[in-house]
Image (cartoon, rainbow, N blue to C red; front, side):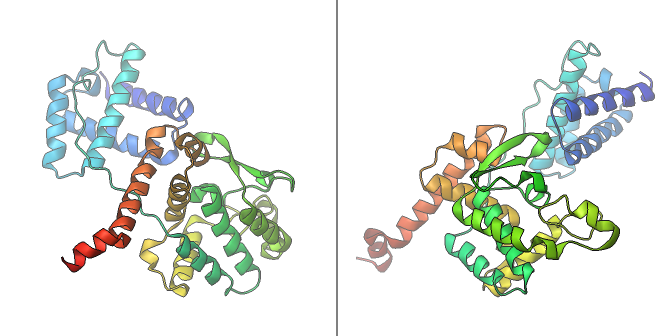
Length: 314
């Protein structure tokens, strides 16, 4: 097949997963690189993607291992190719899927890092040491990311229309793929939000940037019009240092993990946590049961009388 035609097929595939499956831009870019890498590999074998056989797929998998790529990267390559060839079969470009026997690499799933409740309290205390409206904004950001389990991109990009009326204890959030979900707004988060709304006008930029910034709950001077993800990460680093915490162990995603972990530890059912986090598959949420189990094991090991007696000896 002509290389131009193959490229057109790849673009059609990427358009499909972008439109129909709501894949994020970063995912599309990664898949494009994965497919380009596969295409480069096939050029040396003087074939194209639609002529590839199972033996070509096996050779590519072996090549990835020889190159020393991580299991995570290899797994993504495999996912990209499997979806591409399934798409090719469904569209009638191929009669078979040569990736169907490609077993994925064995990957140990590491437990997500989380934070203690005392760490959250320390961050909130550190936020009060900032000057003026910045202290109120910092407190609100932390209360929302921890109290609602928001992704950092969801948090900083919250539009003003997402702010619920005073009598509504939930916030509508647009997550990955443009999917909306309702997340409960607890009393602490509500008070922090109301406090921020009372001083938010002081953070609005002047001049031509003001109109765009007014659309967002956390406005800023930049082109995007809202407080950025990197700015929030730097803010957390600053607050962690003020609170005597290790900034390397504190990030916006750690606070989201803490939200989920503390809910599971408190007895929340996984399905509810899945909905609040915006996970498409409950298997993603199940990792928090392992986090909770690991923390409970550590707690018993550290504090149970029998464990303490074993450490001290008979």
